[in-house]
Length: 402
Image (cartoon, rainbow, N blue to C red; front, side):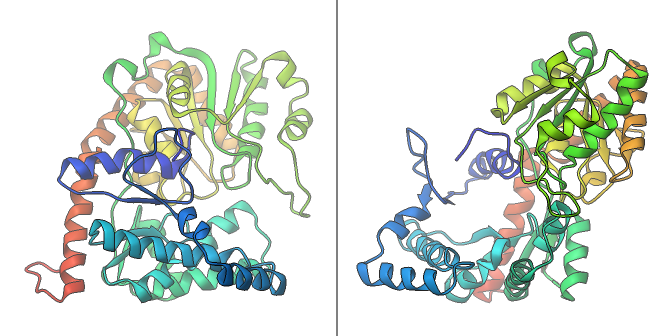
């Protein structure tokens, strides 16, 4: 578990209490549990790894020598399956929801006695390509494994219609029982919502990794254009220096890229790079910033966009993936063509120069998010789908099949 800004963490932080309020008992499987006071709902997969007997450890060590590329996957996947079996036996869970990553769900589906619902958080043929991962054997192996898991799944949910249709097309699967259920995020209290009279009208906020997928390069390119027209503007960059690579495969560091595009930006205070920050800090920064910018090259949904909308922040976001299901261009935010730093800069300047428009877009974004994407509303849709999946798995008839 983590308090750092992270889309999946934010998603479950909001969804789990909402499901519990509807009477669900939740068990969370995670790699490790570092909390000082461990959450009783959490099962650490590491426990199963650490309990391996000597013979299994030796076999895993031999496997690591034979194939270093995939050595870590088999023990971890086996520990995941064992942890789920443990949760079924000890806690009586009736359904598992897990993401498609690495295709690990296939092993769970083939051995579990309960339905497994696959959540399309970030298929690698989309996210890996957006990050700029090389199309090599490891890339293709992961895509094939994820495709096999999706093909094996009877029950699939997607955060947006865009990602569901892309998965259907890429793998040529009908996914007849799939459902689009949007993600959700913690609701910002009224007293913490963005307000024009309390924000810094010169500050632009970007929350995301410095990598190709999140568009860390694009916000720097756009900001270089913004400051030429609006010299008092400042950029607050929240996120880690991730694995950003050039078209030739060379790694690009955040500070070097920024220095080339906007010399002395950090020293002058024109750009503030805060690295990873706790969720509470990010919320305060959103409330203080005039514009929140999202410039991802792809997003299955975009919790960052949803969190900005819930907080009533004036937002400029990329017209890609699930983002248009959160932001309506010209009504609840401004959209720009993905990858177009020039248009991104124009949209940011529009809001910096027109505070009344910015405030109106922020109000509409919050109203839409509260009406459609509150945790309870999303949890009710999940619960309905889960109940139908459990009934279908057990072979019980459904009055209104999903």
